[in-house]
Image (cartoon, rainbow, N blue to C red; front, side, top):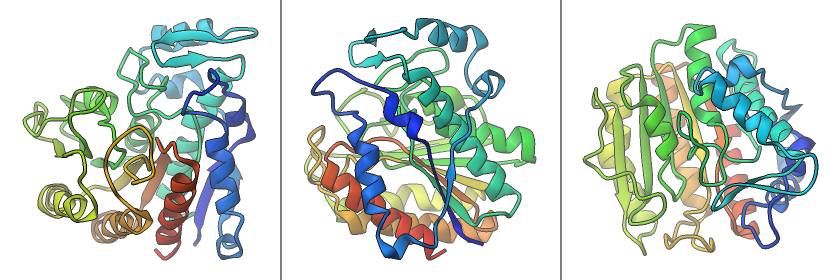
Length: 309
């Protein structure tokens, strides 16, 4: 079995205002990095579009259709202070969720070892019925829920190492004992959530905030003391990674100092846990990462680790 690489050209058609950090060049940078010979073994697949019913696994249908109805014929529509839609955004969002779901199908049925889903817009800030932080639909959450509904996974885990806390994922699974959400993130920073004390109704929310200026040693300590022990105890049937690379030292939107190797290390740790409880099943979904060089190098290191699984 091989590692899947799932993306779609439609995700380039989600346009944002000039100077916006969440831009199509992000995917182009990843594509160039993964064109190197070392990545030839990747199985490359186009992301299918998710159905509205699939999106509704985590979002009310009236919210889903409201987002659809907000889609402009031309130009840009501002959804909130930093989230906008162009004429290509809605298809891009459907491809994002569809790619994540397709990855789950392939991994849960043993057709692939693991998968990296390179899509945009990102998803982890999208709450149950609220778009925010560049996000419309929560791709990682939809993937986790789909694994339960279609493939009978009893416990799924989302591990989020984006520099911003995934408030949306936390909101969706706050009262669900069958999904563990864990996050390392800079704090204080947008969106203002993610304190250690935020643990959910069933103690299945695990936050490990980092301070501005922290680097690889503090990141590894947060994983080793808070996240990895809880994951081992939880014994997930699938691990979904919210793979944001904006904790990289080059990133302009935050103040952590991770390097490519730190993301590879975290990936390896998660794969080891997946090997023990989930038959190695890992699905990684792109979130943030806004310096193109940092994003490309980090994504390449992450995918290299996945391929070694």
